Image (cartoon, rainbow, N blue to C red; front, top):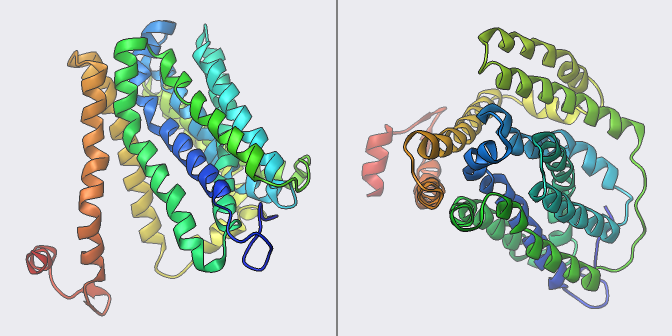
Length: 343
């Protein structure tokens, strides 16, 4: 992609304002991943829908992020970075405002789908802004900005969402992101040079996006409807043809190449299972505490905050465990013994 600013041999040296924009975009995109979870019970009551329907306030955002990441990266090749950042950030903020104003569930879901599409573009642009604005020797520091602010947004999302719900209602959960979007727009307008406009996506990008989106949407719809009748889970079979077609095509070849790498299939399966479990835990715990245990939104948010804080505390220990010497394909010592060695 076109670099947004001067690099190591270009006049002007490092430019940190684009890096700040990348950090702000990372913060707001990851904040959106978690802040809405604590509002699902209130959204269901406010719009008079079931909990299964209300969860599409979350799924409607995550679906286009998953479906559009790879096609968005291909589309952004040759597209002006400045125009893409401004358009995606403005669209993200506008969609959030529309979600806050939603009088019906279909309106809210449509706004969240649009917001997820803009979010996919932002996720692709973050490393481009950070890495393309500084010298190679400074790229680690530049990437540390979005790498720090992104998890910070994910960690603070439940706590901020709980406070907003108790004092201002569920619509404030969507409005709280607007000041961050406005600040990112102002910085991007000032810091990024004009480097071309937007261009329409090519057919390949559109086809890839439609195939992945249709497959994932059918799978999520089957899981949603299965709450009312287990027979609906059979609908998930219909998700296989579009996903298989995509994996067999040029758009899915990078993915299949990674999956076919020797010794990595089980690791990818484990990471997928962990991610699915973490996401389900956030959703189920938030609804259970508010619906069944009659816990306030603030307490729910603080409870969910304990999980990422535990991950942050265990991260350094996990890294030390992973770095311990191994003998062959198996660890040299059992996990308790290795843990005892560290302590």
